[in-house]
Image (cartoon, rainbow, N blue to C red; front, side, top):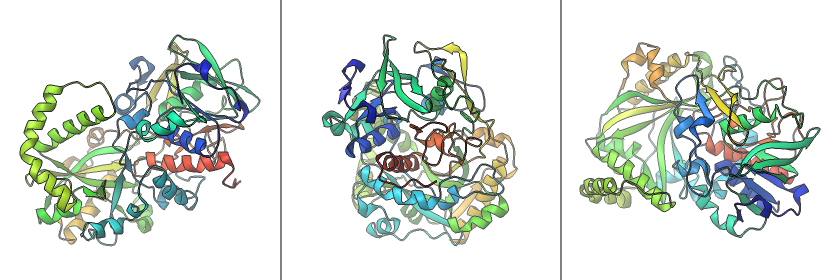
Length: 529
């Protein structure tokens, strides 16, 4: 049920209640699954039911340029799912295995432990089971998967039919008495005894505090806000928070490095588009991407390659019109404030001549339409080294109306990612040429290992770290079950807990961990020491 007044939250069963902080992807998903298992859940969301942003004075960037802190986050029901496209990508075994040359890369959870949670997470998100195998998709569209030889593989990412989680879980939020969603309230503190959190302080728009009693708390407010709240409450004079002496809180902030690394000239444009244009099949979109095969781990060990994936991007006059129209229609679908109707009509008129080919591609070729004149570029998404100096801190001299200090982001990369990107690109160039697909022209600055090339790569809004999982508080903030060290019932969910970021989008693996956390909280999974 929706509430805008904390006083209306039912007080029954508060001792067994789970309070979830944040109504974004992880928060709404975890709350939905917990309520479905019979738990009483209260979600505390700082925004309201519409798309909103974080106040500019609530954060500052003091390190490497990071646009995602401003553009890649959203307050409000659904959180950042109001902005994303719903792309789901799994991590690989190498992402969990420690690499000797990369300190901090060993996860306390093995790939074999999280892999079984991917399938149920797909199904919980509404992805049909018959669409979970790449081979079935290629067979269904009547096309063989591209073969790039023994080192590289082409894989498909999956896109949700309903990417906005406020829409996805709307029916349950409206009808399930076990699920309460409190909007317009900021989680600003905890009350506890020893290592147990007993209540969460929620501050409303008038500045009044309300205590929501609970048996467990899940922080799912996003990477930056999770760290901000933990850092703030570590100094709470009313309760000696068990994490107050843990200097790892806020450290090892990461994001993916993203941008253009090469242009591409295909040998056969028609055949190339058939292999690498986005696929539309059975009502869902799939995007072909390229990565090293997991079994080539020894190559990464020898050459110290960071986990990297690439995809082909097609730029043309139609691309700009398509992007604008999709944004406008998405805003209309989710009842956001509509602006720029004149621009919408202008873009619609410009798109009119492409309507026939676009519909043909969708209906008969199972592809997203790409004009033959489109320029082809290769975009990269790569991890970087986890670093304790890349971190989130707080400025206690700048406090908002809820008493929370300003979040300060200092994103850092160490620079050796440049050589890794070049080595990856050169290997892929040779593989594409050997397969007869075409010529990859690597950016000259990347080939020259010009340090300025790294400054041209931006973040990808895949914020991670700040509350990383580890075997002990010496190396992290949460344990393998996502429980904050020193506490009995405080958990952190989301990419905040990732020691490394893989090359894949972080949300889906964060959701798989949330599925695992729900099992842990409901007693459906054995606890491994």
